[in-house]
Image 1 (cartoon, rainbow, N blue to C red):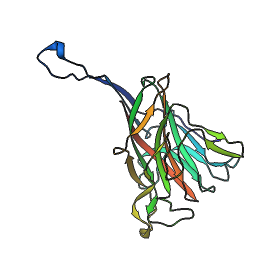
Image 2: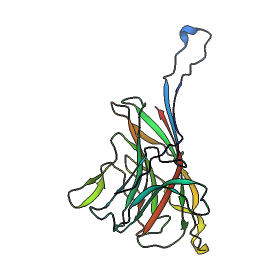
Image 3: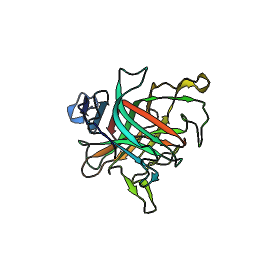
Image 4: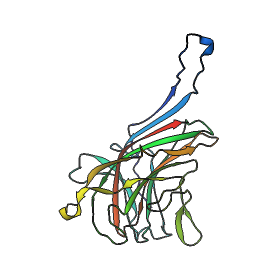
Length: 247
């Protein structure tokens, strides 16, 4: 149904073990602090998608063509044509279309709690302060980031629609498996009538995400759009960083 082009990508994961001890002239009185497990993941889609997977939810089963759902590794349009990214697009006829990318990562400590800092850079062609059916094309398309112990999947809800099997919340409200980190609007004002793409970076540095790992020590990371704008949204994901610290 969707066309994915896996290519090589520069992606790195590092695990840092940091140990700090309280100072004392008497070694017998030194109390070591707990080891802190820190996992840093970086990715760059300029060379390919490196096993990241696209998905779609909150739409009727069998209506992929009507919703114009597509995903691919693509060169960005002008004026960003010197870069490539992971492109997702859909026409939000349901007033609730959810589009996401996901990938699993290992080497986390099993049964441990982590605080996660997300950062994502994407290209958006939606000026701020525009009007649109169901909501504006910029502020009405919410950007989310999350982590879960189970693989995020669009599942048949038994009533003819695909819904997510994780708690991603709904539109401007986050859930236990995904948090709101911003919206799709760029720096241009709608009155400028400039709908060219520009880069935008979002993070959650002031509001860390918390997750507990399972017995396997594996986490699924996601970035997504949760849309109330009843028309087409096309987003290019370019690069990101995920820093997870045990606490």
